[in-house]
Image 1: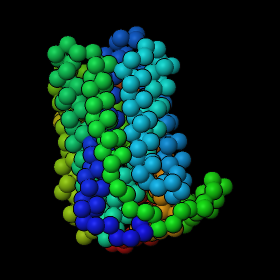
Image 2: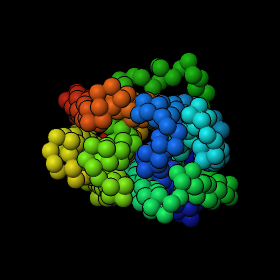
Image 3: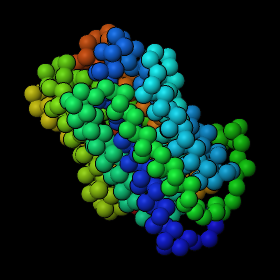
Image 4: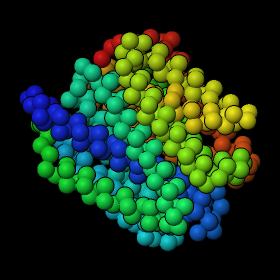
Length: 389
């Protein structure tokens, strides 16, 4: 950003980023608790339910790639406001429309909004808190975790009160409206320069050196996280016989663990090194998935969030630390691969469940977590990326 903003501006922008990630987590993770009643209302199978969710991450993927260019050219304020508007339209449609095709289209629009949040918020934090970006990116992750924790608790309570899954989504519109108003009146510092990067130049800029390995690592990580978050409630209810209330509480615990892990982990990432932290976290997270699926200790499934917590923001910090030219665009590509992961995880779980049973379908998340470990291990052995920022 061109001139160093005042402390008040930094505080207000940081608060806006925290609000954005709370809203991101809340909106994105209403779909897990509302999936069983949505499937029951529409009379569809697991695969069709997975196809509907797939469209959200298709929108996310497209948005992260496009908004990287938009952020470099038009500024981050435009990206954040557009993201809020897309989110409002998407949630409004999803809570009102009645066919799988229209619900998919609505989730696609929600995905566009969430993709704008992902790129815009992380880019603002990196620009404002360059020296402590690892810490602040994890703290934004804490707010995402808080929103993700509140979502299933709120949805579970509303369902027990007899509310429909559509009514639950309509409450989200109040938060979205508040966010848009906040962004409109917030002052953003000017960017240092406008980007002249074209889409044709992206491969040369965003796929050099070891960046593709980071992309693959985040792809498989997000696949596992979203796969667990989307299907845990149904898995616990159908396979483990857990009640509606307790299964939603388990999902809330998963996101609470993500939040707590990011709050604590953010203070240790710089001491341990980025890749070392990610590698240890991924191994412990995969171990929790395995124990939760293959033993009676199902508590380990939501506990996975404690170890998964630091992976996404720390990968973001690592990439921003080694890439300074056209940084918004490169982060956009990184989050595009995260969007691909968001599509793959729940979709694979859905169709694996349809053909091989829900037990085996949910176990796909363990494979995805293992692939995360593989690519992070390769990065660690090749470049040993530690405390660079």
